[in-house]
Amino acid sequence: MDLHQPTDHRTYRPEIRFGDIDAAGIVNNAVYFTYFEQCRIKFFEGMVGKTWDWHAAGMVVARHAIDYLRPIPFGADASIRTWLVELGAKRMTMAYEISLHGEEGTRLAARAETTLVCYDHRLGKSIEIPEAWRPALEAEPRFPSPWATSR
Image 1 (cartoon, rainbow, N blue to C red):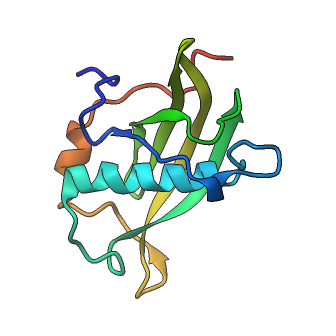
Image 2 (cartoon, rainbow, N blue to C red; image 1 turned 180 degrees about the vertical axis):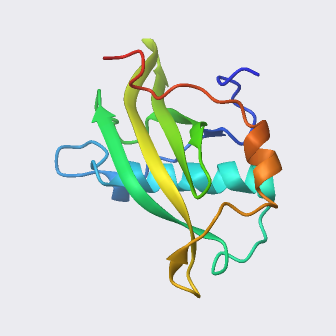
């Protein structure tokens, strides 16, 4: 399976809104994490559907890491690829690459990684990845961390 296919649950195309822009005229660094959150929503909806009880089987972010490679201007044509790097008993690591598309071709704007932990908000503790999710997650192709080949 090609990670670069733009038509599935692994690709998100954010709308770069005026409210995302800071005083320098580029997407504010904190907004990237909102884009990644939207990527995860699309990713999970594509695998487990739109309806499940997030209170009983939710996710919390344990770690974020990002490299900002070039600024994203207002109105840019951007896409974000999302993939699964690692799957454990209670946690998973997802990675992202933001690409800008324009007259100069496609250029990498940022790469990032998020570690998520399954969490039962009602009980206030981490839980195993739900068995109902596991077949879809196990079937997801694994690709290396975005830093595996870049450093």
